[in-house]
Image (tube, rainbow, N blue to C red; front, side, top):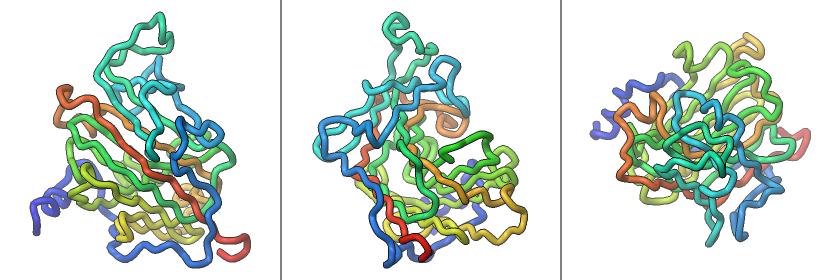
Length: 277
């Protein structure tokens, strides 16, 4: 067993109970229904919205960042870049600043969202201590977490560089009670090269992988209703780079490594024609 695999097996931050190592391939019958190639000169705000809602009171999970509406994000040369910085802001200029010592950005997709489909996001990640990049999904009409569900396509924390996590959270299966459906995979070049993070979401299963290789698969085979499987409604895509929190900052935060960036080459969503799933 390699050191990376040994480290993954001994990780203290997750429950590994849904491992899938088979192939992840785009189904033949799907068509592209939504995408952003980031070829413009700025964020396409017909497709994305900034999330700044909890800046004043602070974000969840003990995170330490302020999410700005633009100053930490840029689109250029075919890439979306979210940059986290170690800095404090002027409350006269940023009245929603909550005193955080870090700034970053978080965006989510606009519109009605998607139910089922095949998703690909090509990205390069940061690996500094304290960083927490994520590619994930929440219901468009989220009323209560975790009851309404969460799909984590990719998470990586600076406490465990080059280790990719995939997880699902529901009322009965979530990290607050240590029952989340989760798996992990070493990707030794996650911070030096672009990789494709994939989600194959079907009525009877959810599969997550990297570069065509599976990490996690969860089947809709637990007869306990929404508590086990709320994944039957439209979800939105979320991209962000958090800083700190109990998980990401388990080994501290490397302020000297700031700024740190997640870069996204594209986001693509395919779906099967109605009635053919």
